[in-house]
Image: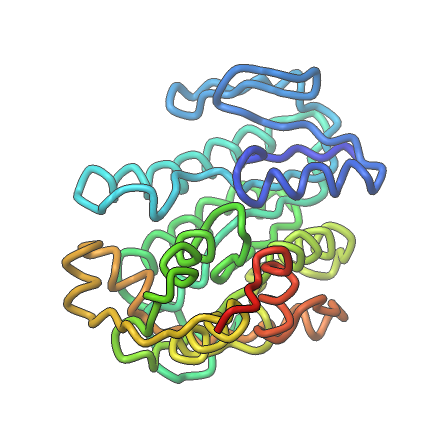
Length: 304
């Protein structure tokens, strides 16, 4: 198939593009920078510029683009850009693909489990109501921005992704230096649930959504075994062979990260991937310790 990927140079996209190419698909990268390869297509969502001619004949669009949610300390300007990059970029993309002579069959659009907000130990699945707060509002608008595509009969999957585990970026990569030095520890109470997924499984999930035509609407991209921050911390320490005795109280997290700490570190979302399970997806790494051992195999220590 002809597959168009936005956010192709990001943490997920940089793993997804080679995977899809090896599967035999003709993969094009939609980029806001300069074109470096023949399959690169430049677009500028801020100027409403989109090269429709080059994307004719696309079968599947995978939309991963958006400003890094944890790239900068949040203030009103940063939050506005986080919202704009997701909502307006998605709306432009959807309006553009609905104007093509031949419509794509499928749009897989990134979203996040931030949709559910801070929900304690409540078991959450795709039928659960949305939560409250900045990220919940952004995710709700982000998913709603796909409506032009959905209204034209394009199959739309809103992929609500959890904490993506990779040593190349994201939360785990930021946690590794202090944990390796033995100064990692529980954040806040440690009782908040972190719903996670390995980068390997996320790529597999996206491919699964491409090939399983009955999947549409919200799909939770999380492991079936969410864990508390306490359990995540202790498991990571065990895998690295390091103590985890230096907690970060909630007030310290808020001082260090500001408002971002509430939504990214202290909020609790116990999310289950019901729709993936029902559609037959088999997780490579459903449990945390084997997942971390896989990801950190070259980095594990024999020292205690």
